[in-house]
Amino acid sequence: MPEGHTLHRLALDLTAAFAGRPVRVGSPQGRFDAEARQLDGQVFEGAQAWGKQLFCEFPGERYVHIHLGLIGKLDLKRYDGQVPDPVGQVRLRLVGEDHVADLRGATGCDLWTAEQVAACVAKLGPDPLRDDADPEKAWRRISRSSRSIGSLLMDQSVLAGVGNVYRAELLYRHRIDPLRPGETLRKRQWDEMWADLVVLMRDGVAKNRIDTVRDEHTPEAMGRPPRVDDHGGEVYVYRRTGMPCHGCGTAVRTKELDGRNLFWCPRCQPTYRPRRSTEGRPG
Image (cartoon, rainbow, N blue to C red; front, side, top):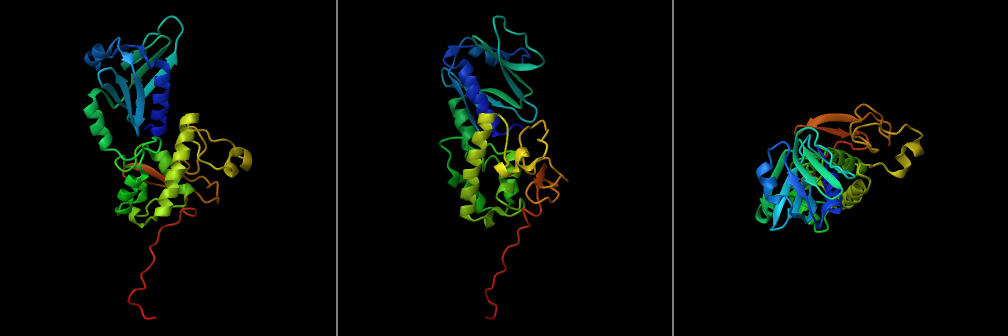
């Protein structure tokens, strides 16, 4: 499933390609046809993302809400002269003066009001890529929860936009056991994790890929081959099961957590063991 940086990059690209000008809106597949007819020929006012939700705004406070889900793709291409024919099951097509965007396989594609957008956003946690994000909102949920921090980071009502890659890499970078209960984290640890996440995800938007390794662990610095993976980017533990940790050489482990694969280094992220209370013991 695309992570938050992908949706923010799409919002920027769609805005640059279409904003301020009328667009043709269609649904070659037909599933969005009635809604597309209402928007066809209207001015595309801009796009924005909140976590993994994308909102394309049209006049009259009408929004196309898109959730890509596991297999959804929104392809934006420049064309010269002749608009290319749609390929495959295109649910939504936007055609501007020199760009065309085709949506396929998305979990959600709906025409929403401003009230519906607000209701959706109200259910989401803070998004590290938004200037209006409040990390304290996420901290209040985390600090009161007995659930593992690995589970909490993937809960979109706690933190919006973080997926499996950022979850695994953030915990590695901060040497935190993914199964450690959220309520045992210290505030300083969360503040450092949030600040790091903001930097990593902004870098993801700029590069349109996820890179999480520090300078001393790049292929050039370590003399190792670059990573080859359809997700792209250099990472520490994500999808590296059984491979040596870039930091200590220990084999990376994996297990299932809440239906998703969890990756971590057992040495760099040792099992959390709470301190035993000395209350009531003889001095």
